[in-house]
Image 1 (cartoon, one colour):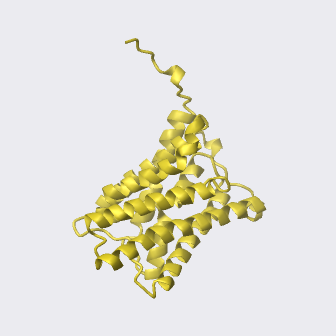
Image 2 (cartoon, one colour; image 1 turned 135 degrees about the vertical axis):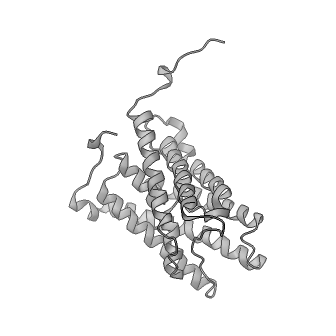
Image 3 (cartoon, helix red, strand yellow; image 1 turned 30 degrees about the vertical axis):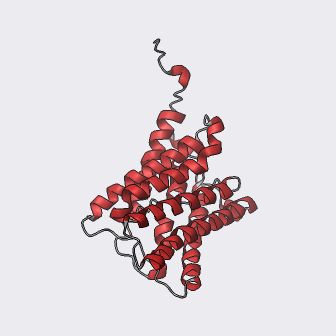
Length: 253
């Protein structure tokens, strides 16, 4: 990736009306996503006597997060780009698609949205416990770190392919549903092992409200590493590498 693509931004950017509106959109999108995603798990526990760790609980979590993220990305796409994830914002920064200062503003809004969503859930449910992300008993921190790296790589790679790539064409119209689908699929793959966060803000809200930061670093380092790899791979090979269909060899059958 050409280093000139990374931009710090100007001091006044953080107070620019457009940047503030975009950050507010990220706040609301994250609130919508976390409230629905975390809330669905709490509702399933209530209805099944704490059965969220069952196969049906995993399926419910995957569907709820896929649906909620599809909506959260859609409603923010025209204002902020619909990142709804500090790892996606970081990946966009690595590819030169957002400045550092604007990215920090997004991060603050995303983290705040997650915290507010969890606080609202705790109040609305009469004080039910907000569960922080945790590892299953047979998974080490390094196993979980690899899970988070690979799952977030898939997520950010999908974001680049469907939303960031200037050659996406009509594919951009399905970006929100593609992003929701990959998150839902990754939850089915990794949810039973480490909760399948792929999103530092989604992990931060429950951890802060429950005041449980056990292994919390995994849910930051894993997604940020995965996002960085995805951004570098896609940006260097498919965007700056300018690989097009016309460059591919033609085979006659």
